[in-house]
Image (cartoon, rainbow, N blue to C red; front, side, top):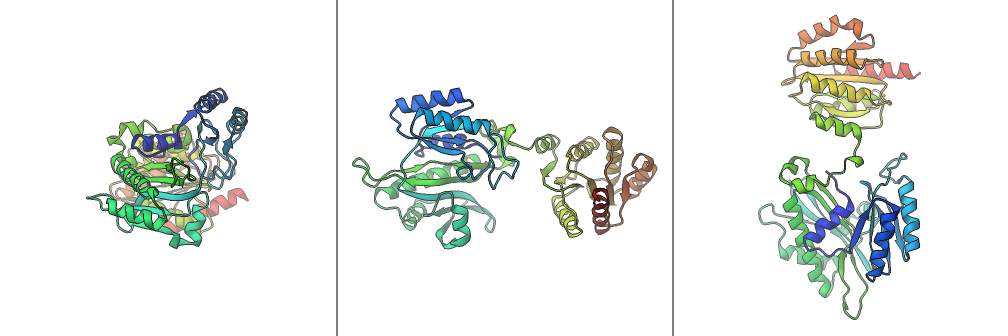
Length: 402
């Protein structure tokens, strides 16, 4: 589960991480009121940021620095009336319904700091770079040595000496070191306490030196958190931060029925049991010239109702021009899938090509069910194996589109 930046900044602030003050707003009127309040409290620079679950906001023009209430008003009007299009949103863009109005700060140096799971060790690691900011992906690609990784023991957590050494390695000096160490330690505590799968501060910044702070201040001015869905039952406060408007409606609908569904850009709908088999099915569809429209794993304990709902979700996608059903029945029973296919045909209809490959538990009764329902499924073909199924659905879709 993802949360917005304003929520992530609040998590950090609650943990004692220094974060510039800010307010989430939903309208131009609220934005103007927030700006007036911040300016009246001594701010001379504000930042207006679109709150969406996608990166690339700055390059897309959805992060604006403002030095007056008029500039805040102009930036807010633009962001709330235009879709944000970035490399992470696709050409369709994302509608912006929330903004963060926050104190702006002068920046002397930017850093990158994150904690996430190291898949090779199965434990968390702290990842940092002295070259933070909007180009961090480029840095990781072109200069991987600039990225520092420190393993975190799952029993003892991040040790102070590890954080201190990392601060030195990143180039923090003077009083900056203790500030950076404090932020790292507190970030590790937040990750451990919330079951976060990713906690990212980009950028972590040092402000210019002043008479009061000759070494500058180390601040977190942007934050991103992802959480393990399987652990949300332990964190109702985190679960309450979920914003359904930022999610794909079909994916939300599928989750209500316990279906693992991810929408893709192709035109061949897939209904498969088992994540590995689903991935293999998508690969072989691509191999034979097709393009998957979704990842859908119905699992091993699906019911007639959930499988029928899976077909509804697949067929509700206007891009779908064919459907491939690939079931290897172990726990899942093939006759249940066959009954769901017939039920879906009666309720929503199959007007696109349908290719069905079934093997395993109760496969013979399943084939009998489909044979008897052939008149209700005029677009259906059965396949002998997965390759035969992929070839047939790809050819049928190509013929339909020709």
